[in-house]
Image (cartoon, rainbow, N blue to C red; front, side, top):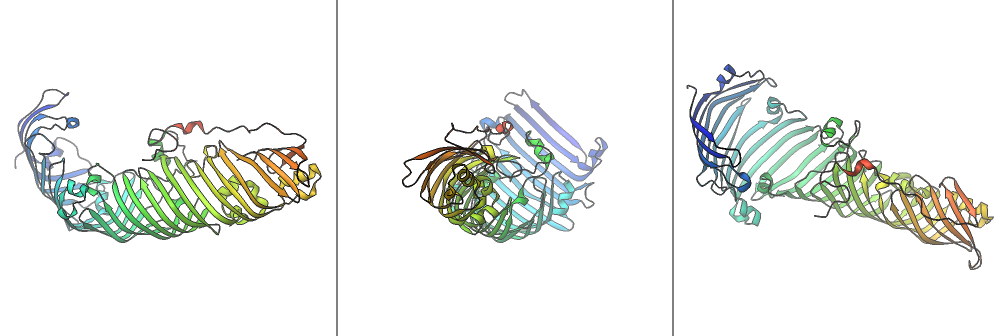
Length: 556
């Protein structure tokens, strides 16, 4: 075949792109190296193209040139310096027709694209019509060794190993899939994944799919006993995906209903860690940051979870059962039950990725009764929020709502926390509690040292690194103590108290408590103005977010 180009291409201006083209091209790909160096690429094959096109190209207005084009390739092969074996026997037979210059009149026919790689053939055929309501007929059969073929192209930041086998036929249109007219669809077949490993710079460890079989059933992509491993975490998935064609065409999210089962999840392993990757997208990141858990966009997936144990940032929880919703980079948890430090817990919450090293969270947690000593020893966040519990022994309950931001270490940025709720004391012995010890010493009332507290509700709120305690009444050995004030999350305190003397507390002693929880300073006969000085949130955390603003995301 002789190389030749016959015809013309005219472009009148770049405003509305009026195109007039009439081209016939015959080309031997191996001749490219004669006029252009291809040091890392060796291509062969005969290409024939015929193009007739006239009209305006304005995709924003859905205007396209009237076009008839064919592309054929025979005896093709492709070899790169990254892998010794070529992709060979490449054959392409494609036509594009658009008689009216509209999306509804656009037709694309691929009959077929086929190739062979290391002795294994692969083929895909596709007929696509009316891109306003895509009518499709797609057939694929064959096997691809993704690890080997990926080396041919060698993309930085990603690596893939494993094989994919396809045997499916899809026929229908977009409107029937969207409106639920599934009886008009004819989608069937399978895609089988074998020992698929995916490496990404976004995550420190690879994702492994031991074995996975997808089955097409009309608009659904079903999967059964889909076993996935990431580090120490192993997940078995069952369920389905839908809205596939809208998702592929970027006209809507990928929808799913998935049952997730696992014996153990280590969420810390999912933390984004590559500083080079982060710095490209987030100027506020610092070298050495690990990064928050990244939640993908364009998803609308419901998870029903049954997980035996989860470890996250020094927090160990067990028997996790509930519902999760993944939508628009946000994870929602609804009425999820689990055990934490031996206590039965229910929680609603949200988590949203803001940037590569910032995330926003909120949750409402309810623990009916728990051992305060066990909770203090096992849950670090509880130690931060309730430092006074260090010397407590007994049973309390918690009903609390909290929201704020997470830093690159997936730990709360304390000044960003805000919320409130009730810590209800059922029966607690405050042995060695320095606040009561200091008050007892200064007032000479030994009865209030190491008090037994029963049926007391401590109502608190958190904002800008300060925990505010509402006015609370406590009965201890005939004394009536009234306390209100604030404590910062770094341990500073400022409380105004009144020690009501027996028998009825009509006569009382005003008391001011300052200093720290570890070293309180008690002043008898005096109170002080509140509040403590609040601490503002980090200034650098006001931009570099996915949705253009920092703070609680809107509920969409």
